[in-house]
Image 1: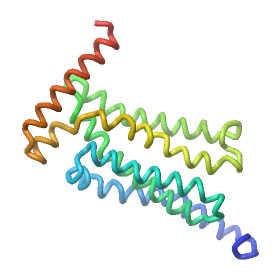
Image 2 (image 1 turned 45 degrees about the vertical axis):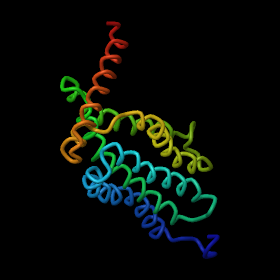
Image 3 (image 1 turned 30 degrees about the horizontal axis):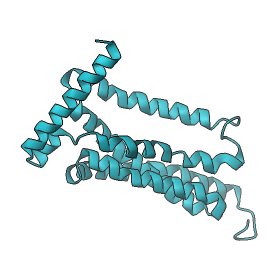
Image 4 (image 1 turned 90 degrees about the vertical axis):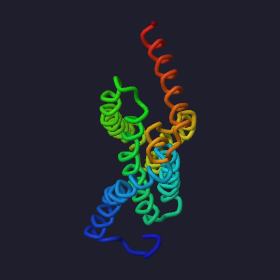
Length: 197
């Protein structure tokens, strides 16, 4: 209305919302397609860290779309957050599987789907009208995609690169040994804390 001084037709509105919603899926396809290549070029941890740029940029664009009065920012933001999800779904289980001790690999692989389901549930709860589901709050709701990115940027640099990646893709035998030693120490400490051993 502000831009063209006329109301959008119902069919046009449906097409616009369908485009905005479907951009996430298209971005996911693109992200999953390039995730494997990035994980070899940047490493598993490096790819996950770099992938946060998509999430932060998407949160910024979607959060500012209402203030800017631009639905195009929503479309681009949804595409970027879809790319973030596609790359993460490709690389994150790979990284967890490679750094996990043999006894915990199955649990780590299952953890991905559990946390995806938890994320969907959290999004549904946050979208309730009593929380952030009101019209004036939707830019904030869309911007919350930056929270996991910030957490990952704070925590992931403390983790080692995948020993398998270091040995097979980089040929760094010394780095592989250091990474395995570090991971064994961390896992042993966590098991002692969890089970009071």
